[in-house]
Length: 192
Image (cartoon, rainbow, N blue to C red; front, side):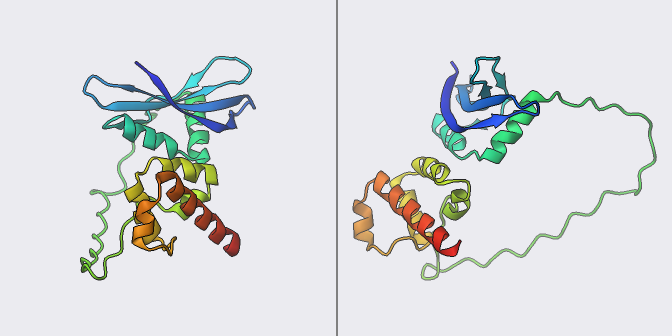
């Protein structure tokens, strides 16, 4: 059965200027994985427009995480895909290829050397500064999908907290999110 996972605050317009509210929806497939799509509902009660499947995730939690990370740019593009018919591609004529072989693949870049335990820096699941550029509500939405351990890793990886590890361990998920958002927004104000 389909469920509505997330409703977005912003309104979006199609090419004709018609306004829509976006929401992420999903349903469980027969194999247990979840697929997600977007629906665009006009506030004036017109017909709902929906996309084709946008993603397939291993479970509902991953699908919800995906939905919280969508940016306004992505949603604008999804509305455009949902309201525009797919172009029909027809072969008008054939011409010989410009080369006898495909372009060679670029050489792989050298892999970084493994870090030692002493020099290893924790890896965060997302860049809070890049997500904050979409708005603090987007950052909060993505942070809510992370568990407290992942939030503490982010705080250490980006140097966002000067609290000792013991104090960080006692903070709740909501307190960790507030700490991250406050520090990121403060740094953004100082740099902007």
